[in-house]
Image 1: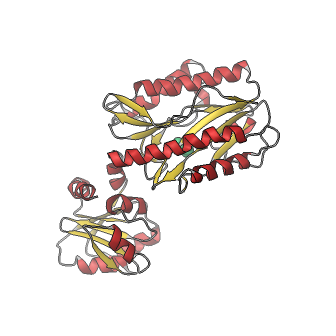
Image 2: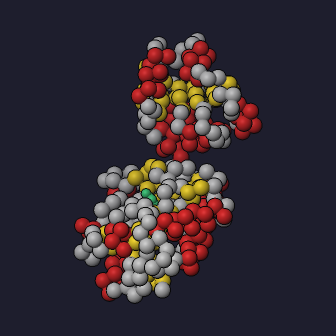
Image 3: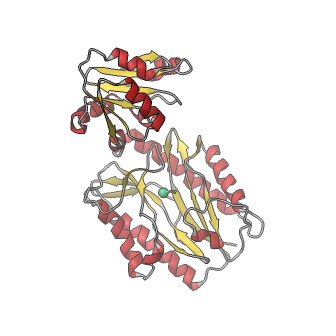
Length: 354
Ligand code: GLY
Ligand code: MN
């Protein structure tokens, strides 16, 4: 954790501030190793403060090194008291805080300029270290196993989407997950044309496409995977659409490596779908970073920023044909200097369940 805090200190000047207040709990975990529901971190050149209330102070003493741990129910007032002679002028804070919290900030730090910072710690989180990669890899393995198991569970004409979601969720917990990283998406038939059709009580029928998009938390890090399978005989057009999405997913795997621009990361996959004539039906971005959050920077717009070794990114092309069906295939990719490693290893050839 120490080197992470040093990175924050080194980034303060570039961000235009001499101290930062960190309130996002994932960022606090990243910097301190503390996992709880209440905490505030303050970092300046000569202060590293962690403030929490009595529920968590013992846990904090055990989990955190290198910070002064302060038990209080008035974190901001306490910080203001401690730093009053530090000659600070600009204090950064997470721009995502609530308006009520912002009002408390402005009322407490009247002597300072307050600077809203967006993705300040999140940008440091983009590059994963070896431990983080291993943890995400394990989370992906849990998802892979749950996917293989669910194939035997689905009984056309009997099983509902919710049954499938609950099965996946419990299986991932059985294999060591602490929970799901987002509400499991199980979308069958016409519902699979909704990219984020969360599970409903619809019964899965023969002749339908079925999209499963799910992931888990393992040791605080996420996995995020999508597979689309077919129930019964797939038509020629369904097979064609599936193959286009698979080629798009694979084209990105073949090209993703450090140095690829965000723009190109999206384009590589999109061009395959465009060339096949389905460009209008790929209606979302190609992916996002994963880590402590299911969606974290980077995202892939029209930017010339480049992806870096150590990023873990999703590759999730899809084609959605309204009132008919949809197909999405999603993998988690670890970017390396000369390529990428696919962390989600569940099969991707079209699986037809009977
Ligand atoms: N797989 C869920 C999402 O990316 O939003
Ligand atoms: Mn995703």
